[in-house]
Length: 76
Image (tube, rainbow, N blue to C red; front, side, top):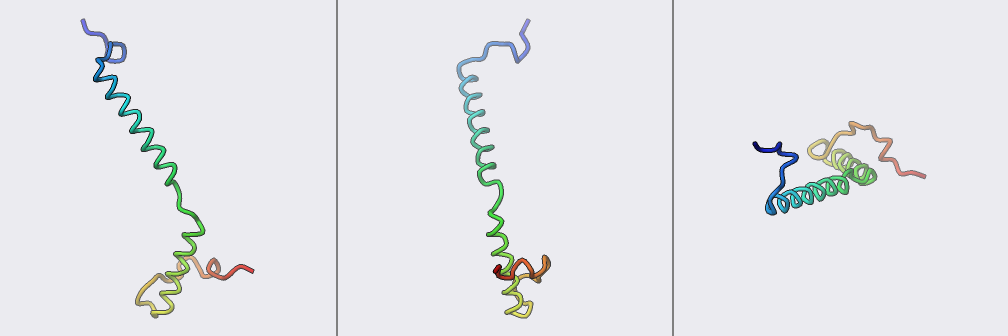
């Protein structure tokens, strides 16, 4: 009778495959964590430049100020 999958002895190839899978999963998780979130200041800069483009082109390009224009005001 065969033992359940968790307790049977793995072949050398299965052990190698499992190690590669664990390594790839760890790298993928690490990559997602590293990329995680964009720099908030960069997001504000992009938003403000698109709002300015919207104003400059009279609405033909860019974005309307859907978040408001206060965040685009230069800080003193």
